[in-house]
Length: 457
Image (cartoon, rainbow, N blue to C red; front, side, top):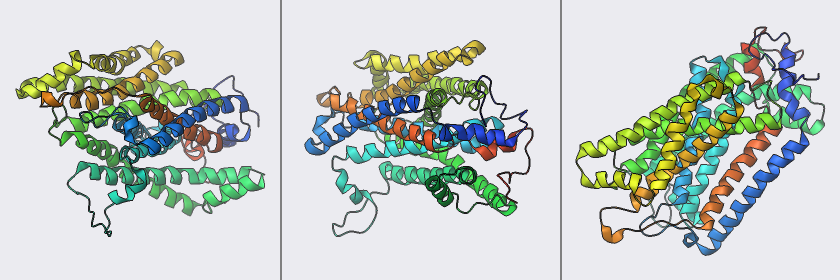
């Protein structure tokens, strides 16, 4: 069936044929636009190649290739780790929390956001391993008996990170895969290519669109959504404790857990908008990912931007109210010291620019949406840079003060992380349905019993 791209497909209301929804969502997989796809994939692979070269350089010469020093021992790798963990929060928020709140508008973007969560968390996990300097000995960090009598410190938040992030990744991956099973079955029944049919048959786990299958699916999906929801709050709260439980001025504060969670949702939604706009253009998905989805996401972006701005102001208030001169100095130094440029980039991008979404014309402009999402991603990366670097480079002892100067290998590894992330996202959008067929059909006006999928009974 040919798709008319001149007008949006009314996926939520007014659709007269459920097969039309299957055709629309499967179209990018069955009729790919090779030029746009290979252009985007080529750019992502180029960035990934730069990252691979920087990792090889690191493995050959050690962490001395970075700008880290005795004063700022945590540099770009930890900044990047916290940044990518934050990116991974939007997927679970859109999928789980909005699902529990019965927000039907999530159906157009939930699957894509879930996939972004998976790739963002994988990207984040690379940095702690590389930051050790000897990633081939990373298994020593696991809590298991060994001949060297090494044992981890269970009171360290760095270990809490291991359990929190691995749990978050596992539950998010299962949640994402369970949602894909009915769509894999639909694609299995649609395709005629033997290899594709075999692959879809394996991943569909014997799905036959029976009533019993749907009952088990809906129960499992609801349970997993319930498990994912507290993880959104717990994971980045635990990541924030890497900083909050220390005695470093600027880190030792109880505001960090809610502050980090709000920032993670903020940056995650910004990245979802950025990637959705790119993939929407590459695969001509304007009929699936509509302006309704983008406008509501822009409202969430504006709201979380206000929360983050409130946290910035409260940090200064807490430092003043505490009466601790070390805390007060750190925040004055952030705003007017060596790295003041990073602080004001952060404030401008995260607090001021998103306020353009108070105007409906800006929320409905793809250009404005793309620019604000990019500036938000930039601002949130600088937020982590300011937290890590500006707090470490001036601590209690002036004799240990020192500045951090990143090297070309710091920047190349950062660029490589974006290449790794976008390569995974682009390949996912090419070979898997970016929108849940079953959920879109369930909320459409003409929704029939959910076992629609050929002649199955």
